[in-house]
Amino acid sequence: MNLLEVLRTASFALRGNWLRSALTSLGVIIGIAAVIVMVSVGQGTQAEIDKLVSGLGSNRLDIGSGGGGRGFGGVRVSSSSIFTLSQDDADAIREQIPEVQYVAASLRGGTQVVYAENNWSSQWQGVQPDFFDINGWVVENGAPFEGSDYSGGKTVIIGETVRRELFGDEDAVGQTVRLGRVPFTVAGTLKSKGQGGFGQDQDDIILVPLETARRRLMGAMGLPAGAVMQIALGVGRAEDVSYAQGEVEGLLRQRHKIQPGAEDDFSVRNIAEVIATRTATTNLMSKLLGAVASICLIIGGIGIMNIMLVSVTERIREIGLRMAVGAGPRDIRRQFLAEAMLISLIGGVIGIAIGAAGAVLVGRISELPIQLNGEVIALAAAFSIATGLFFGYYPARKASLLDPIEALRSQ
Image (cartoon, rainbow, N blue to C red; front, side):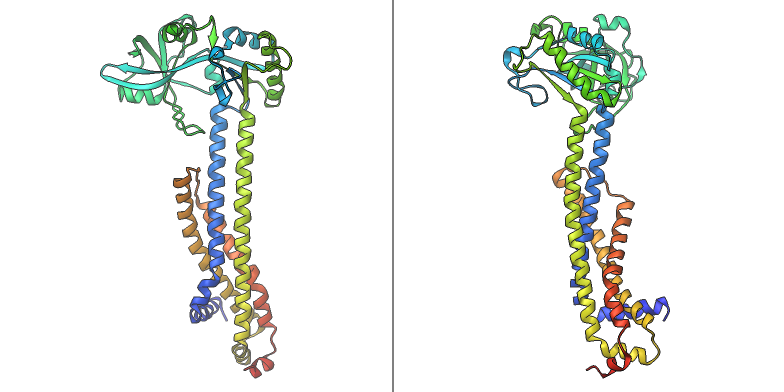
């Protein structure tokens, strides 16, 4: 028998018991659908983690003010100690900890930015020169801040979202915008980054020099001299991040005169630890989904094997007739193996369709990142074929080893 005849015979046998075949393939359908959802969620989440790493930098430390009520990074801050960091702290870190390559203190706030009849509510940040290197910002049009700008110059660099909302197709460089009531000149626009790892619009940002932010945008708040909200650090080598974190904490405790055993009035966030935690969570979820998919596939495969063994028992006389008219053990084995693989393949095709729809649905309902591509579909199809081949071999072999005479005697 050639391959076409084998497939035609297998299809005819399956159609004779189509309901049983459909129920047999149910386990494969569920397993393949679970594989697609698992891989899609896993790849999508990994892509988000990669975006998070590229956006924040794995060699980065963030220092926030406060150690006791609410505040930076979920750390509590009391109303009397909101601003516990200073620009002098940033300078000390730069001078005394050689592992730290970049240091940038910052202030931030929200404001309404206005150009002509257009206005947009956005967030501004008062920054130092190293802020651009730490955060990977590139000035696409115009020019970065000059040295004199950091002494209180009224210039701004805006993100792509702000530029689009205020200027549309018009060139923004050199135009005057108002942040609140203060006029600023647009020195440049930032290269777009798109959505960040936490879902925020990274391009909805306005950068001003730190001293300008302190004087012009936060002057009414009566900040302590040199106060800043956050200090971002870029460590030269990834292996030095943990060591640098310990050095920074020790230096700040010394500068802030914090007694041994007393609570810090600042918080240090290690971006690498945040990423590692998220990666571990993703891996755990992927393993859980993988276990569910594997169990479903095994159950589906056992179902195929069981039904094929029943089919062999029911069709012993048919097998004897085929052997009597010239079919060899190889032909019998190929026929039953083809039936098992067809059941598994049909279940795989249905499972792929359900899995793809399920992955999209999971992404919309749970807002988990989904990445569905051709590799996922190919992997699911390979699992489907392998399941039919593995679990269908034993029944096919059992059928091929039957004695023709004994098979013909069977009732």
